[in-house]
Image (cartoon, rainbow over the protein chains, first blue to last red):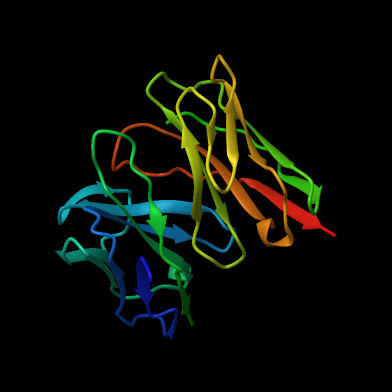
Length: 114
Length: 110
């Protein structure tokens, strides 16, 4: 009954490859997010989708392309992987409404680019 | 969103209350104070949030000063499992990003 799940948990790949990370939430939320945590442990927003529409895009290289097939899924596709893409990627979701929304995070995907 | 300032690290004995301070002197009237924590290698975990009034839930209490320029997260009876990095975040609006700072590393000891 995991609320926000991500696959895979670990991903090791070579430079130049293309890879995808999947995120699913079973909370019925209408907004999903991708965050990146680098080696220095700084956690930063990358993207946000509300009802499958992109609403936040924070200066992320266009090698990163989020895809939201439905409200419960937000996948992250990365082309031409670089060493600097090595990080832990966290997916989150929230339900928007009249008041402040609370974001719930997945367990993370640790990406290592060799 | 307003910037927050937190101590880099704190220690707390198990069973004692852990009081984690946060300064947010430039907070705006419509901005909420959120607290999240990140236990090693896990995803950030929501703890509590508030606007003006003090708040309490099963995890913690949040005390916000009357001028709203600072707040304190209280873990009433800290356990070893509460060892984590605690982030104080000021945020407005819905579906907006969480801007994480460096947080406070809380070490709970025997």
